[in-house]
Image 1 (cartoon, one colour):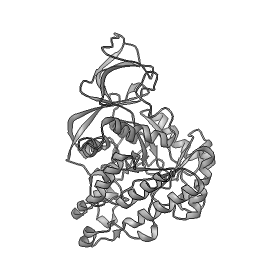
Image 2: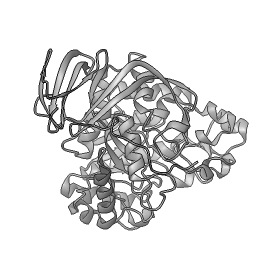
Image 3: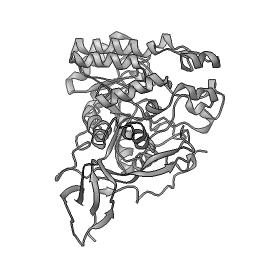
Image 4: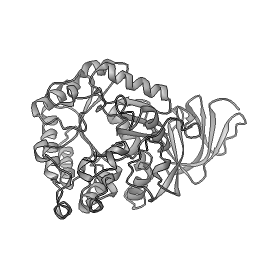
Length: 435
């Protein structure tokens, strides 16, 4: 067999047409029926779906600084297992990714792992403090070529700082990804403000805290004619503001996480901190609005907000627990369950929301390309009818804080091809895992 030469036989491209795909030296060289090549390794994938490799615009890989929760290597393994060929590493590391040196370090760690592309996201402000702009220009000019900037985990709450950031990134066609949370409305907040928070006696997190920042920032983006991306939208009101902004031609895009497409604040009744997440799980009405918005394009993409934490940070009382849950390995299954099986999206729509659109927002070049002759062979192969049961002890992430432990989910990623190489069959989990 010739090295790096593969045939994917009998798969359904975007769930629409059954074809064989020949890959050689990292590129798709032929798409046809009954391809024969005795030098190629054959993957029989009848009844399976072939998508462009998934692209996550919102991942926390924790390195440098919190390697007890995740590393670029373990996060890359989890991403490859979930069908991803590109991850965007958020800036809330230690030290913060607010300089060219730190983003270059993360970028090179991704290259060393070699399982997918790791694109560092640069901090908007120094130390994520929301006061002074970070080295945005230097990060954009670095070897990492950063185009997405975010203080995720913190809102850029000062409108003047946000305006200056939006103005600055216009120079190189960047985008500001905003964590929409008015801090003065969420002091001490533990979960969604509503009936459940009242019953449980937990400090509520009002929807208006998210919606107020979305409204302010779409107006700022319109004023300076710059690109704005809204992270992890969770409320029906936020959806309506984004829909209004898009109708006006404002350059705004938005994301929803898999967990906000499925889970609701009712789960907090268990007091299990695995369901404590920022922004919080909302109501069934919000979940339905988010699904409809993703289907009609008001929300552009799905992004995991994969947030690994050590057991010490989550196995404690609710009020003391860290916010966040992991999601790379389960993302496509949740989208299958909430969007495909409900008829809201077909697989071509999934390819757009989870590959093509996020790559376009991030300006990620070789990612999110159509499955066509001459395109890079970044591909995800999914068996949509093969169910699996989530086991937190078997995840490839270094952390275990999945909200789906013991849950049966539809759709299994059977392989991921990055630059023409199958990554799942090559993974060996040797790095130490946190308990």
